[in-house]
Length: 174
Image 1: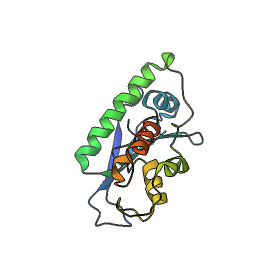
Image 2: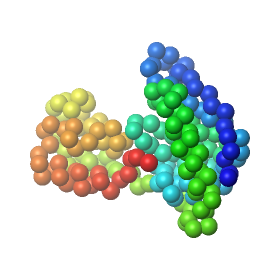
Image 3: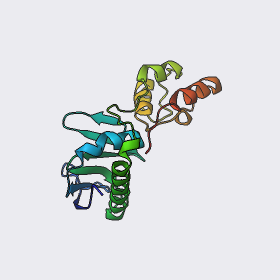
């Protein structure tokens, strides 16, 4: 077992204390830097940082960053959600470490959609029916995983299908 424990700190963002969500930083009892490329390979990290090593995951509107000595999670509902995610990560970290001999480490992040490729398939009317200021903003939000083809009311059936096919190759959840 690589990771035995952590001390967590739950807090509201200082810049906006009235936010409903909370953030969590878990300070790890052990340095887990060596497992990060294996964890990235197993879970398909959104982004991998080589120096200092860290892997970033995106799931359900959250960013989870795993560093050698800490884990940071944003946009949590409450402490119970933080506990659930931290315990899941602890299990995944330890399983990846135990199985590292059979895992090809990955030092790269997942491929990301290109805003321009999304924009090419949008109607480019800037109609604002999607609640975004322009089609370019919509495309950027879609590339981030916040919006989907179904969120553009003006999108024709053919381009909607092409956009769904393009986006399905990108993974946004762990």
